[in-house]
Length: 172
Picture 1 (cartoon, rainbow, N blue to C red):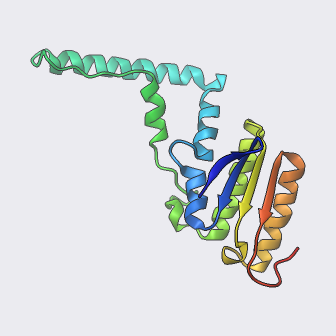
Picture 2 (cartoon, rainbow, N blue to C red; picture 1 turned 90 degrees about the vertical axis):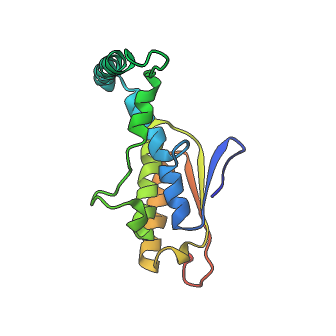
């Protein structure tokens, strides 16, 4: 999977199922993490995060007082930045509770497109998505669905899709 800037477009290249999962879930640059950060920065969640931060600070202070009173050369540290790390480390699962690896290629491509669309509504950006050999990922009927969905997303956002195929019958 490659992600790089090309003429001020963010480019996402998909060759297989693993790359779709990586684009969605990647711990530092994944679409879900970017969406999560955007949502957590929203004003609606700031009060909740502040209360959680205060409670974690209280817990760490209590543990430090209790445990390290007898071990004076040690200490534990908690900072508010760790709160996002805690949230970020939660496992990203499908609606059915399965790991993403259990989803088939069609479900993953649908999820990827939904994440891209949601990301574009939250943090508009120019994106080119290149899906190589889509015929190796989905059947003809699903291919038509994804072409139509990509056209809709492209009309509503600055996201553009390039699909390559290796088999006849996939030209739309």
